[in-house]
Image 1 (tube, rainbow, N blue to C red):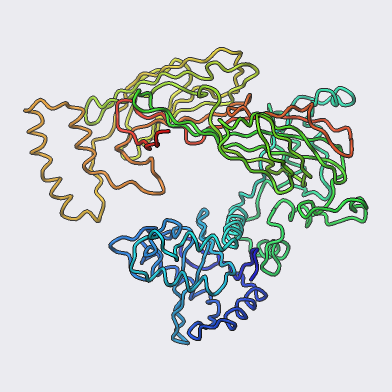
Image 2: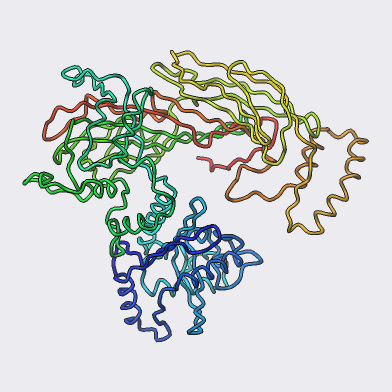
Length: 623
């Protein structure tokens, strides 16, 4: 059978588990019918796709059986034979099966693999085409007596999925539809400087591209994008995109059908780029949009650009950190980065440049756009040649270690002085050792208390402002863009926070065991006060007794852990050392096109763990 991706059907459900949109692809379904008829196993018969009511009923039944839409993902006591959790693999939280009950024909059959994607109030299910043998293999695993994938076992979920590249395509389709129906379909961010363009020779020499130059549009282009670019002139830097900024009204069925007819008319995805599809529909093609006779037009560039030529690069890095401020626990800092590009070039040129900062000691993984040609590399530089598509696209993705000191470092301490009052202290240093030019657009620290209600706080920070809600305290260190000239910014914030009286939050399934623990509270309190036990230890022990188990979806919202989360955005050098020299970028055939490069660093999960409290750590093997 095929090695690519074809979709048999897709369904969209609302938060009442009602199917509100579905699409079946008869051409792909015919291929599944033929494959089933050619199957040598007489017990394996073709089963038609379910109607909307049957699918909704099967999905509701699975939620009851598995505990939630995603399910357990692991074999538990309540897992039943034949269910996804019986397979005992977390992937079954995302790749699910449904047991369809056809009452008219008195049939019950398995529908797998269903790519599950939850987006806002919607549930998207996508069923890709596989081979009958894959479905039979999964059915056997759902009824196997063994738990998990035994060593040496021939049938296991990992080996099975390696044979099914169509599943990757199904998830891409699901995520694309999720972004579209919620109006969140966006392109990779490419930043253009807001300094005014003076044109001519100076632009060519300096690469100074003003917002006024953003009026040059690919042809055809969507009207909403052109209007949105003009509003960026008052900003210090603006993003540029071809994607419509305002998505259509959630679940506009006509718009979904229109997108399907262009992106995957017969069930095989052709182009899932929403910006491309929207632009083509907005303006169509022209007789002048013909590729050069000596060049082959790539699939990722369905039409040619006409207008003012230029190239924009943006290195976008997201830094994830766990800061402990403890000698026995090393801090953990990882960077997820990508090089986004927008090449507004006429014709079908090739662009090449050396990408620097690829030291193997810092870069963990590296991948390139499918339109790029990259020879084997070594050392600190990598030659990259690519044929750019239209609009914004991601040229490079990478994972790296931080080559500088953390942009925000310091410590956070919280000590419970009583059951309902805690004293805290922050001492932070921002961009210590970083060189100009550097701009901090914003920096905010949040102390979350998901299980306690904040009633008041006292304290004055050395810089910034403070506010609070019922469940967190927010410290805004920097609210407006602030340039840094090589000196670090020191900030301290001592204070106290008061909570409403503690109320134990017991899980409903705890039963009599929790009641027994509650009955023992008064005895424990008497014993602790008379035996000289540390008051803080007693308070934390008492509060931790009533904690619910940590939620897999929200690993940090557990009261036993106290932490502060830092959010920031920095314009300046990359933390990984990745860089592009605009002067080294060359274009073939040669054209005069200014090149601009920018870098921005934003925070991901940037956590300061309470130095005086508990904290989760991951054990790393010794080298």
